[in-house]
Image (cartoon, rainbow, N blue to C red; front, top):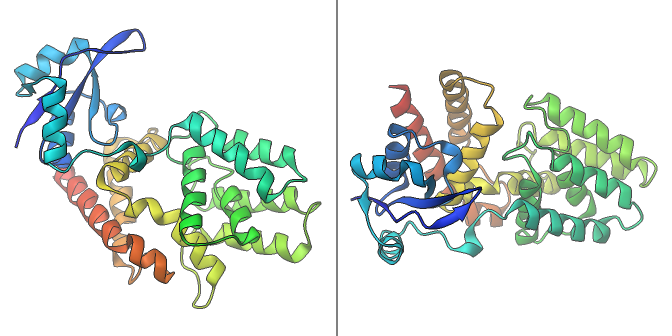
Length: 295
């Protein structure tokens, strides 16, 4: 097991960067980065981007200096490498996809779609941004969902996001009512509102097929590959960067333990088959890490 770093040769933001990786586990990588002052925001699926000014200190701290080809070879051999197709989409690409998707869903309301994309693109968002919207829509597609009420609920479910669980979903449901009432039948508007509120608990009743689809799609990131999950966990921490570490850890531990107590995280059969096992492994891995830091 080793921490590896390649030469600083990758230009961006007025400096050049190295890649810091582990050839065995993301846990080892996160612990080394935290111990040596590499910010969590620098993590990108299977590596940390570190500026040239940190290179010598990281080598002195124990990172093995290797060439780029050797770093990638050992990353792949260790099973840590995350392929481009398995990564969280970039914000610009996600925005383009969202703009393309909206007219197919509600073609007569371009301004509603534009307003929603603007909301999902607010600068204070990290996880709950347009990438999460597109990820939820992708998960619904994998579940075979083409139900307009469910798709609209996905678009509205985090349309209001101020980091206030429960209040955000309620405000998002009210926004859906305001925006959709002039456009759709009252019963469909009410169903979209109901589905948005359901994302507070992710606990659809037995037989609630629409609720199960939306809940599973919203939670699908939990069952992503380990690197993508850790990007999600990183971004959740950034969404709550107004909280100190101890307060955040306590709250996050409570959330993770609550999820792990659930008999089933995913209520559709396909969602369960696709994501349940990986989600539980990811949640347990993050929980163990939080407990280590708390200790």
